[in-house]
Length: 280
Image 1 (cartoon, helix red, strand yellow):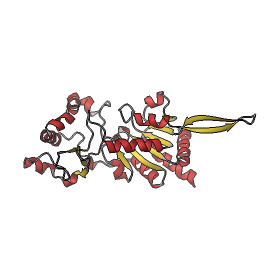
Image 2 (spheres, rainbow, N blue to C red; image 1 turned 120 degrees about the vertical axis):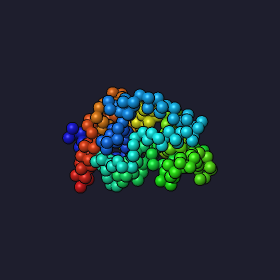
Image 3 (cartoon, one colour; image 1 turned 45 degrees about the vertical axis):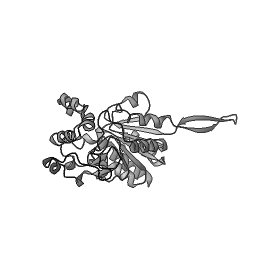
Image 4 (cartoon, one colour; image 1 turned 120 degrees about the horizontal axis):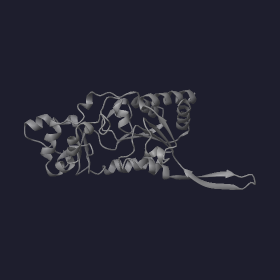
């Protein structure tokens, strides 16, 4: 593993535009439960998963009831009390060093921002925000006393720009990824020459398509033969490094160049330390 960690550090140092994709695996190390793992929320409560598939439709048809149910059953508890772990801080440090340009995360927990990352795309939304489907604006949920609105019978909260009902920024089943996030995520992936994939099973689409988009981008390389002729061939423009507890479809399909198997909270800080050593 040490050789792979050193290799990842060298690849990061030599990159010009690195991005990271993160999933539930980096957040479970902060104590946030996943959904489908052995102790996952939906594994323990299949009815909760069935309700989750109805949530977006509920908002569209009855936003007042949507909010009443959301306030009565906070799915992940009080995420505001959860702290980032060493994996989050390592990615924040890579950004401060100028190596990591963006984090694109499936997680809704705001932990990357809490750890210090400035450039974060919340692909599936952020629990701390409310979003207007009509005009696309987002608002800090702290600006809305949702419990008070409930007591006063004034749910749902309304957009201050266009007065349409606000929903949680979190992307629900059957809800499209917001256009601004989907567009910028694709743009960043098409720019990157290195991608860190941290703690994601890479099976939830369209997020799982992003590494494949990066892998398909090609650049031309030139090599000289013994006879003096130059050969030009096209290779992938992006080095893809997986840091996951288990292999994923990206491993088996050889989308990733190599896998460093283990916990992100242990491996990412070691990579950062190697980056520091080799950058001296």
